[in-house]
Amino acid sequence: HLALSFLEESALHRDIIQQDFLDTYNNLTLKTLMGMEWVSRHCPNASYVMKADSDIFLNVGFLARELLQPQLPPKKDFMTGYIYRNTGPLRSKAYKWYVPREVYPNNTYPPYCGGPGYVLSGDLAKKVYGAAQTLRVINMEDVFMGLCLHKLGVSVTNSPWGLFNIGRLEYEKCQFSQLVLVHHFGPRDLLRVWPDFQGGNKTCPS
Ligand SMILES: *[C@@H]1O[C@H](CO)[C@@H](O)[C@H](O)[C@H]1NC(C)=O
Ligand SMILES: *[C@@H]1O[C@H](CO)[C@@H](O)[C@H](O)[C@H]1NC(C)=O
Ligand SMILES: *[C@@H]1O[C@H](CO)[C@@H](O)[C@H](O)[C@H]1NC(C)=O
Ligand SMILES: *[C@@H]1O[C@H](CO)[C@@H](O)[C@H](O)[C@H]1NC(C)=O
Image (cartoon, rainbow, N blue to C red; front, side, top):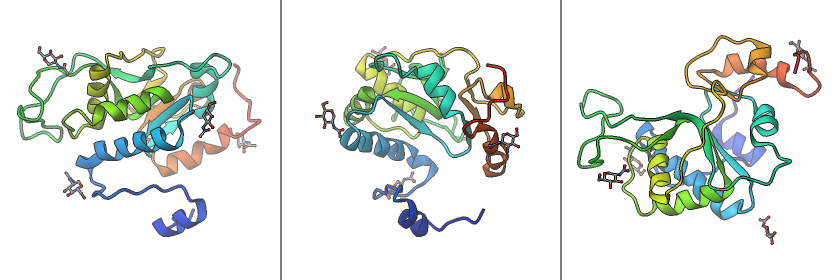
């Protein structure tokens, strides 16, 4: 489990995209928008796109088969994940997610999908990128995506309860085989559960 250096990984897999800004927590919105721009330009026909942090458990098979259902026509103007509703900006400077009134005047945020992982239809990724160009960027990327949706007049879509988990959940193979995402899974946890999700490992009742 040797870690590759940045340049080695780039040379080996050719899967790293870079843009000219500092990769800091408060620039996360720029990083997400970079992804939306990439999708808009290079994957114009993608049915769905997912933004995911690296510290999550993600059950891609279940997401694709059960939630998105590739046998159906691709959904349009679709975004789902763990949905936050009736939240608003924290106005005290003591918070990591402090947002000054000058940056965002309203007291509430539109509904948005939690940052650890959310799914969009390909058409919406492009529209979000376009809407973002007309808005003042704020540092919380997930809230900002919600602001783009609000601007577009698009609503987030609820997923069945329990598929996207923002809190940590103790690993249980058959439970995890029936959900999409669990936050707070580090590299060690992921290596441990990986074999359970390889092709042909059908030991859970479906
Ligand atoms: C974001 O990136 C820009 C460009 O590299 C940099 O000037 C700025 O300090 C960064 N902002 C934060 C909040 O890290
Ligand atoms: C996207 O779909 C259009 C129409 O079907 C096709 O002409 C085009 O080549 C596709 N583009 C890519 C990048 O796959
Ligand atoms: C902010 O408040 C104004 C005035 O009530 C409203 O028109 C606007 O839609 C709100 N914006 C968001 C992002 O909720
Ligand atoms: C299937 O999962 C078990 C543990 O649940 C693991 O020991 C085994 O190696 C996995 N099989 C494959 C083919 O990955």
